[in-house]
Image (cartoon, rainbow, N blue to C red):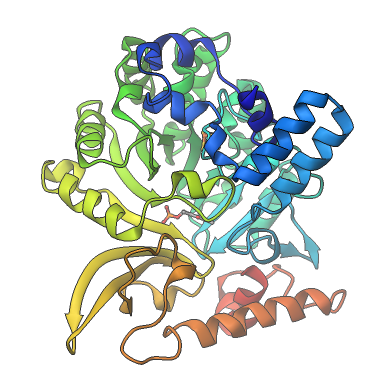
Length: 442
Ligand SMILES: *Cc1c(COP(=O)(O)O)cnc(C)c1O
Ligand code: SF4
């Protein structure tokens, strides 16, 4: 009963592979993969759980739906300015299936890829899966993407993401990827696909209907002189164990594609150094590159999953010590926050004050990247917005500029149809009015 109630708010989906190969049913509910895929009662507040239980018991569909929607809306469905700040414009028209936050990388959300083979219970994309109106990113066609990229030579990497683009048929994926191989897009050096399929549906790369075709598509990208990288989600070493998963890794690598692995650190699933040591070791063994350890975003059921920054950094540091240099490519714990991707590096004493040391590894303004900065020591902080500047500073070094960028972005949008650069210039134009251009993009 409580599962039914929670599932109204947090949509869930599993498949045979997850149920039969990944979950240890003798260890329920603690099993990490069970926690990773099945919604748990404690994800709702006591009040919300009681409300949903009552409604489910009385069984009025419309009321259940409305209450679930209300709870979802209160769970910060679009954190970090996702909806307002990252959607780029072209000729003053927003391009809703794209996000362009960091100069060199564009995210593309194909409409048919906005679901997954199974759902991770911590997933921050749940508004997409729950079909919350007006809150979906999705693009139906490639023209907008290609035209935007032609006008933005600073973009070297396109990340096709979702949901999970690997739920799409190969023929559809081919349309998007081949469009990116056009000679006018020579500046796009790499195509990435964000996916959980290597874990949740490895058959996608092996025996699934059009998997041979998929491998040929990957090969073609390589032959055209571009990198194809699968950005694979792996949360727990168990996901790497099945023989079929290892075969899928081999098939992908044989196609010339590379695999980079990333995941957030979340309570109940992988909040121990042992889990990460094993995860990174196995990834290297399979020829994959450990890439990011994320901090769980401040959205959805994050209260259930959140790990204090101090603990996340301790897990990262302890695990990092026990892997070879080949696994030390991994960066973390990293917060994808509004101003950029922020690493929590650890604590230090500066002028007798114990502080958190932070550093951007990606930022809305590339000038911010790499410079260490300090926040007050806070053992309870779980996200960047919990942190306050240290050493008597009133704000972090980038905040004034961030305000200017976001205000300029709002003005640029409000000023339409007045042309504001419109994305028709090449790199030269980008330099001349970089302030306005960047403002449009934030
Ligand atoms: C992480 C991320 C990227 C990719 O950043 P890389 O440093 O190139 O891996 C791009 N856009 C957004 C919005 C991101 O969060
Ligand atoms: S694979 Fe990624 S997008 Fe899909 S449910 Fe898991 S976290 Fe969400």
